[in-house]
Each structure stands twice: as C-alpha cells, then as structure tokens.
Length: 223
Image (tube, rainbow, N blue to C red):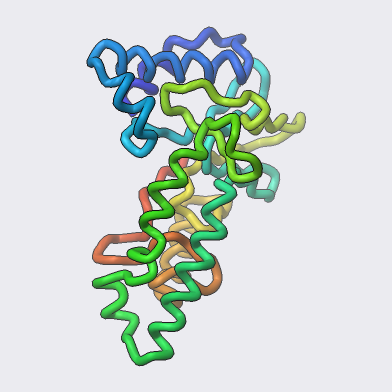
C-alpha cells in the first residue's frame, strides 16, 4: 500500500491507464530487486505483494480497475471479480451447507470454517493464474510487480454530467450511494448470512471480525 501510494502520487496527470499500471508494477518490482526478493517471488507467486487498485483519472475522466475492486456512478455498480472466486465461493458454500445439514451449527462453522479449509489449497494455487499469459479463462490482472495484460485493465468512461463517483474495495457485497447505506446493507446481509454462503457467496465469512473482508469506500463529488 505504501509503495503504491507513493507511486500514484508521482504519476503524470495525463498518463493513460496501461502506462499508469505499468509504473505501479515497476515500483513493486523495484522493491523486490532492491531487497533480493525477485527470484523468490518469481518462483512462488503466493509470496508476492499483491494489490487490487481502482483509480480515477480526472484528466481522462476515467476509472481504471486492476483486480477485484468496485466503483459506482449514476446508480450503477461496476465490479471486476476474479474468475476463480465465484467457483471457489460456490464450492465453499456447498461444503458448509452440507455440514449444516449434518448438524454443525453456524456458530461453530464461524469458529472453524471447514469450507474455507477445503478450498484453501486452491486459493493459494490461484495465485499462479495472476498475470499469467498461459492461465486461459482463469487468468486475472493484479498489481504484483510482474507484467500484466493491459487488456485485463478495466477502463470505464464517466459520462458527462455525472455528479458523484464511488470507489471501493471488494469488502462490500453491495455498494449504495452513501457510506451509511452501504454499511447498513452489509451488516444486514451479515446478520442474515454470517457464513456468506447464500445471497452473496464468498470465499470467507464472518469470523470474529467486524466484517468478512477489509473495507474501503471513497465518495467523490465530481461537479
């Protein structure tokens, strides 16, 4: 986060999406090389510093998404999920549903998520699909210090007259037009489905934390 925060501040204001993501990638690559980590992370993708980013370019009036982030404008939420996440989330949901039918309580499964334990090896292995030219339909782009396919950077053009823009991390199952509404929606969903296996299946659920994943929400007034 600190590396990318510094790199984003240094981006020229008129830079295009592919160039911007390339410079962010090079910033992380430089970190690896100066600390003699490059060979290690080249061989073991699960050890890379990996970030999903969503950036608003004022100059181009565009949103750039690399990785599983969210944005919302004009009443529509735009997502950029990893292809493998929906598959693994579905498997986890089926496994936990099976254990509930066998008599396991939701509370116990929150303490020990047997579904997540089952998919954990695959969660680690999916790292080898990130920024891979040979991953086929399961490949996805993230900022991890290694070259990515610029075609996998999602670029959204903001229509003229758009008044507000929301950028967020995937810790929110749904985005609403205010932080208060978004948080209320999240906690309602979590109270109804703390394991996150029904309405919005996830690769993890509520387990001793305030939510199932980290949350960032930025609401920008454009006009």
